[in-house]
Length: 188
Image (cartoon, rainbow, N blue to C red):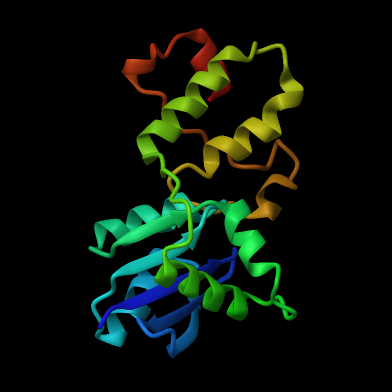
């Protein structure tokens, strides 16, 4: 008998639903939106999963990579299809979303999307940052948002509300392969 998982991830908590091949809900719960917490929840069930479904979104890459590395068969589902499937539900909560995503994963009625590697996302962000001239200082906050979330999946919204003189300067190290010239150093 196969088992399927639906994850509805938000910034603080991830709702998790485990269903059997016949559609019966076996276990529901919540875990912190940290890969280790979600992995611990899934391993505590003691079940072997056919598919772990996750809606494409801001935390998808982070969770999908960590769950795949932990040995789970993760599929990232296209957000528009999931939204259309879940729109028929009268009560819209993370718990019900997780249940719906688990049922979608069970039936196979979804389109899987490719999850870019962290290195690929980092490279794209850094190349985009190099294209912006240093004269555009107004782009500092959006650029910092893009580079500080790489590899972490989350960004504390309050961290960018501090005055720039007291805010810690964080940026991804471009490394020698990106030709850390004057434009890259100006962005750091």
